[in-house]
Length: 129
Image (cartoon, rainbow, N blue to C red; front, side, top):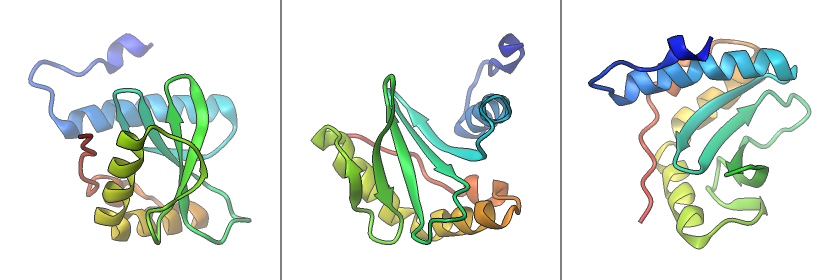
């Protein structure tokens, strides 16, 4: 099933996001948790969950094989839980601040059960230094 999800030659960011969104949908259905894969780059995956009992907008960071290695607050960009290598920590904080408006819209849509797709597409690529 995953072979049909392989992006074609001339891969661009949007086609990669679309392919990952399909993988995400399959994973979500199997796990029973509603979440949205925001970004996947190298060893890092940023995921936002539907967590109706949580009032502060945040997302989870998977690092390599470690799920929920860290949690970042959307409003400030600060890491509020867990640990990451400094290189990733700084990059994720900067990315969060740059994408705050879209991330808040995604959080709101996920919590209310609405479509977050238009906001996902507006996210910029994360850059590590």
